[in-house]
Amino acid sequence: MPDLQSLLDEREITQTLARMTRILDERRWDCLGTVFAEDLAFDYGRGERAGISELRKEVSGFLDNCGPTLHLLGSCLVEVDGDTARTEVYVLARHQGAPERDHLYFDATGSWIDEWERRTNGWRIVRRDTSLSVVQGDPAALGSRALPEAISDAPQGMGS
Image (cartoon, rainbow, N blue to C red):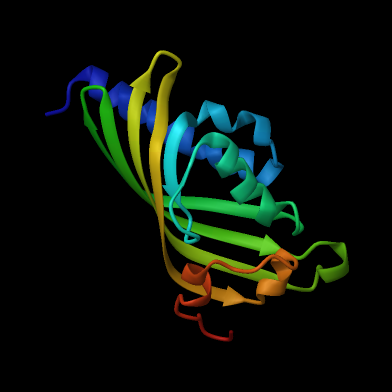
């Protein structure tokens, strides 16, 4: 049976994940440090990268070139072990084209697999890996940036 602190930690972590979706959808890149550690490592399907400045380049490089987005999370699993934690959450990311491409959309579904540490400023992600399940729509909605191999190799949804 989890103790009260574990439940509070789990809630803080799930709230932080929810905050992350809003940071992405609202393009508030200066707030990435409220979710990620400066020294994080990550792989968004373009190979191993490190550091929050690299993460900012990665996510803004895609999202600043498209129109509105909506990142939805579900089926969140959280395992807290003292000052470390692991989460796996399903993600559905809807990307609408920028005004000149607003008739286009691109959906990516998969998982964020995160490792967390309790830091002096709260829980922060120190490692993120993404796993794509299905993509659907037109990648041109993202603009001219080349898609990561993990996206172009993901199974296509119905109607793609």
